[in-house]
Length: 404
Image (cartoon, rainbow, N blue to C red; front, side, top):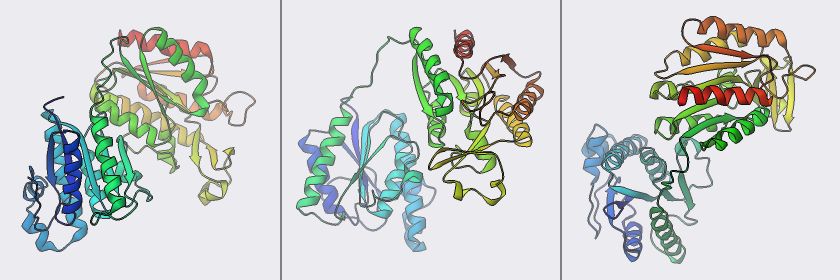
């Protein structure tokens, strides 16, 4: 840790005074510093710039002269963010950084957040920004980035900005000193996907795995949750995956609001990580308030899970497609994979007598999985509901068998 540095990242051309103050504040905490300038214009500051804007531009595949000549601010922001990400990725690979801090307005914030995408979980990332109140979910993505409101513009020092910059310096200094838990009390790390409709199953699986000294991390299948789980699998955080709740595939197919995108259910296969997969909650697609449903779905079987959550029951045709999609994604797995099917229902409200119970639709899903998996992977079936304790026990038994 003593040889690693805190990266100061930002536009030193227009905000030199602010970044000089930030650097001095970090010096108060005796932090080793590495500076990266992502400003496009000529820069003159009193501190040493370790990585200048010419180097950042070159890392994006262009030159600072070309960026200036284009006179295209949007393109400049995009390219400098891309170049800074390349620089940070190299520093991470060389184990040279222990934290990243940046400050900016709209353009500067975009560059900083784009660059921080290259920094993995656990290395603290803090951005002091004028646009914290804006929806930055697309820019932040699934990264553990701390956003801090600058309150006033990052455009010269005053008593408010001085206070907040000092706090930002103290925050990144403190976070960078936190040592990752090196505990060996657990055997392996397991990712598990969950939903309100599969909570009982996931809770039981977690209990059983913890009894065996496994670390279990649950991800709520809300689109962001699935995307985050996939990203952390690719970062090497997990040793195995228990994908109980693959509902995000249904939202991707039917344009629901909780899609995790086309890459859901691909990371473990690509990384060679063992997985046990369940078609959990593929009986439903998520929408917001009932009046927001696309017109073509207005006459479908619907259920109000909450005032702002409307569930739509998947039909036979959709389930045939979903079964094939699930298997096709898993066929590419470089490690053992099994699919487990609970024949009595795949969600809390998909059981005999309940609102989404549709044996014909479920059978279409199950048969599609069987047909497409034949010759590629093992499919196990149990005459149980997804939330039955017996099914949870089977899931854990099968996962441990392929992991151990």
